[in-house]
Image 1: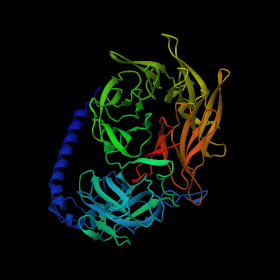
Image 2: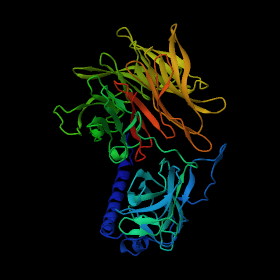
Image 3: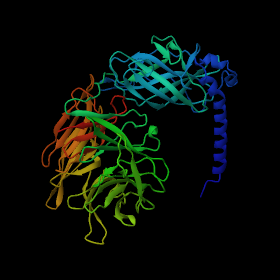
Image 4: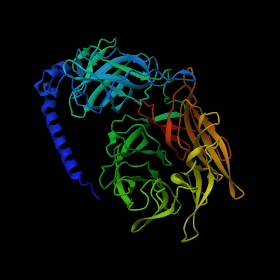
Length: 611
């Protein structure tokens, strides 16, 4: 049943949007047409805005009121290495003047971090009463106004804290950006702000103060310094990994139409790399290819989803035997299955789009979830973390035919001892399905293929205890001997966090559990998923940082042959590495993966390690 107030709410929202747009259209041209941007004091004298300024106006309800800054947290190693102020450019002033950071104008101010990584920043603005700052475009570079090396950039949501109302009637607000991880070069860096947005579309002005830094405005040149501080790690982070030796960075993401912070890739036998992005700069998402062309690597957006009948926000694709890409995307009631193939006509340029076919709309049972693998007959298997007969997730099969694809629910989880919310799935060498699921501390399960016409049967081959074996298993693969390997997280008896690679070996009709590798510590780590190749070798990449007097990286890409131990294919040395998501291996044994951070622009990268 539809909400009876929906129509009135929607009408009110539309009217508000029209009024806001009309106000914006009335004032934006006057700002944008100025060769020199108006400062906050000049804008206060503008007839279009003077009526909005009322001294002592209460702040917007969405703004917090200022409170004293909390002291730095301390731990076993002394001061916490996270979220300390590593550069403070003087106090907020709020009474002299301020500079526009929207309507096409940008402002840049200098700072030094002495080699430490930036985790966030605060800056102080003049805002119109009742107007709430929402987002800002930022970058940190080696030269002012975005020039030189780009250490990091993006569009950030801001947290607004009300400080006071000044004599001109503006709210003076502290805006905070957090969650960054930007490694800097040595010497002076520059914080650049522009394209700020607010709830009412009004100008936003960066507060001018008497701090020690040097500032520039994009249309004026040198200006007085601005009020801000930079937060970061208490100890210098090692620089990010780079190409060299048998490691090569194939693409640095910018977050400007190509996406950012990737999580995994797929690869075909020839070494072409594929991935999916659903970040805001890609609209409704895209699937991309990175291929070697003319002794370099080219990033090619294969297909941009429109959000219509073709779907939106694609999942990571898998590579079919004929070279097509298969994946799921949002669309319809429960999602859809898509296929991407090269256009039937030859492409004569470096960048060539592919054609999409929607093969199946999920209409009932589990939502689309994700697809995992084909079997030898061309049937496609996937899983959903929710839905199914009991709402606890399901495993499904999609079978192709001349009339289209047919879906069958193979098993619905109950959330009890059989598990729930499956998160990895593979087709075993014996034709049965194997996977991991939640439920308790998690399980590894087997779905036995019926001889004909019967239902599939689930066997739980290992139930985790949440102790030394860990909990929450995921990323299951099979090696050349038929053993299963996966990852599980946990905490040791003395409180140390870990992620472990576990092994389940078939033995006398059962399975024997053991741990074959792991990363341990409380400072921080990141790992990829596991991957296996045609010979049954298993691959894993992880990054780990520890140490009280700084960070000591232990970052590797490793390989385990069937029945052997993990050995290192690549070691970062004293460099930071943030592997994440699916690994992929081509026909020559090259290993491909992604990092969530690092890269030239701090937005992540795709890399390759050669054997």
